[in-house]
Length: 151
Image (tube, rainbow, N blue to C red):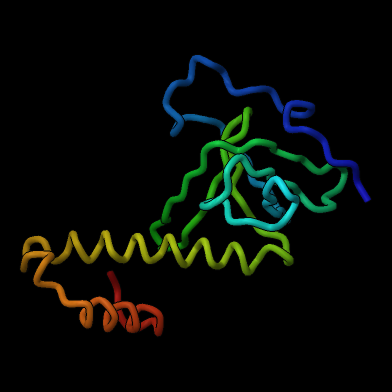
């Protein structure tokens, strides 16, 4: 088993001169889990100051504590990614096997957010958002889940 190292032990802090968080350095964090203060698996979207831990990655594994900021984005191929902010920059989360269910739930929540934003954007010009029925939302969501539609 490898010893976890604090982020600051292996990476320099991002320069204070970089004010735009879109310009922060980005790192891939493979095989990781996110824990709450009780050391239980938790969603990055819901936790308050969680710890991101890498699992047994040689030669060292990194630990990012007291995460106060996170971000998500969607690539052109519609893949959703999640990042945790550390002192050195953004850490793209790639879940460990034991964390995959929690990660999958986060991705689904973000997909719903994108779906609703796209639905609102699409319907704004065609008919008022108030005129979009709950049934239409469910039908479109069902089609998307089955790979039959697009937002």
